[in-house]
Amino acid sequence: MIRPILRYGDSALHMRARTVEKFDDELRTLLRDMAETMYAAPGIGLAAPQIGVPLRIFVIDVTLGKQTGELHELINPAFVACEGMQIEEEGCLSIPGFNATVVRPTRAIVNGMDREGNPTTIEGTGLLARALQHEMDHLDGALFVDRLRGIKREVIVRKVQKLRRSGKW
Ligand code: NI
Image (cartoon, rainbow, N blue to C red; front, side):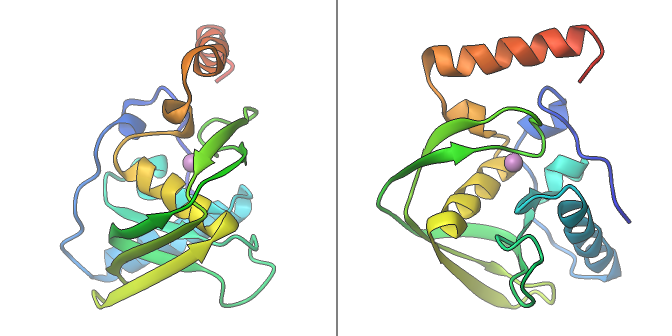
């Protein structure tokens, strides 16, 4: 089931998500819905708080579903390593229509659990490393604009506030 994606300013996006404790059918349904919602958007990543579920879960597929076996699901993730620096244009399904250049690592290794509760690791470079950090940020209530400084951040926040006031957000 495709679920509505919350937008910047919704309080559910701006709080720390909780640890997953139950690896049950409800979790599997949630993971399926998250992937379906991400692919439908379309996007390369989605974190559970973006659909209003305050749990530490994200899905990523940098191929947008064009290649099989590229869907990553991670539960209760933690960084093992972050290296290097890349500066690329980035967006977010919760801030549609806005992009900015964001500093991210060039390589990231993240530990977590799979849908059965077994330990698993995702190691990514380039776009995958960027997506990993972007989705990790969501679990701590941070969006890409929170990594921007000064005028770059203000311009986006002000435009979003204007859209919100006029009911177009
Ligand atoms: Ni995002």
